[in-house]
Image (cartoon, rainbow, N blue to C red):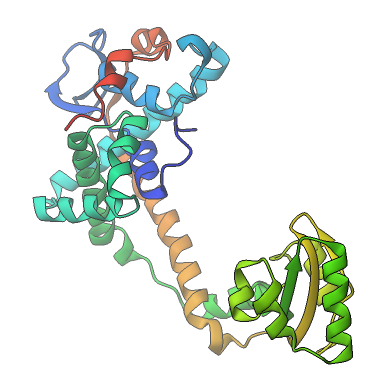
Length: 335
């Protein structure tokens, strides 16, 4: 689901999207309570918190209009599923005496804030309609769930040698080193200047790096125009078209791009090659372990849901329109 600001770093976006908790500790005896969106093993999920989380997920609409039913219904169901699953995980953590300390929470928040210039963090919170207190609460929940997984899910997961060899055999091309070229460039504004520099290079009067340092407009000029090694697809297509067809030591004709008029020189070439399993074993094992851990998490949550007593207050859920909450947005960034 899109956020209000696409500029939020992944760490904060993960908290906003993934930790839609909204749970309170009151017991809900009446599932038709208009302030309760659902109950999970008797623990109430409040409508107010649900609507606040939903407003964070919704894209901005003109004139604060409410989204259409076709837009809002799938989002509401997905959000409610997230809230239910997170609540079940936090209940499981409490049952297993798993908690995080205030110091751990502070370190977690510090890691998030480090993604921002100091003056921009409060602005990012405001854009996400999140207060610092809520950020700490969600960080605490995230770290608690991580501890639960590390203690009760991940120890069941292991990768065998046979699985490593089979995976490498099926995905060997993904670990191959592509062909790379080491090139340098000179870029100038005008065609006449580019041709003049080209003539000097062909006559041997000047070295390519010296002319790049003196005349090139690109940031790599101070390095003699050195672009380093690069595979196909990293640089603009015109660069690849020239660099991968020139021989080592050759200088290109003038190449025109949106950046200006270029001259290229190929310094080295490195052929592609397939790596041996011994070179990438740790990467293969990490991929397999990550995949197995994700599957194990899903199975763990599935087992919790199968045993849980979940009641959804359908009339309340249907009544939620997703219309922006001005008061929530205006006070979100206050500590």
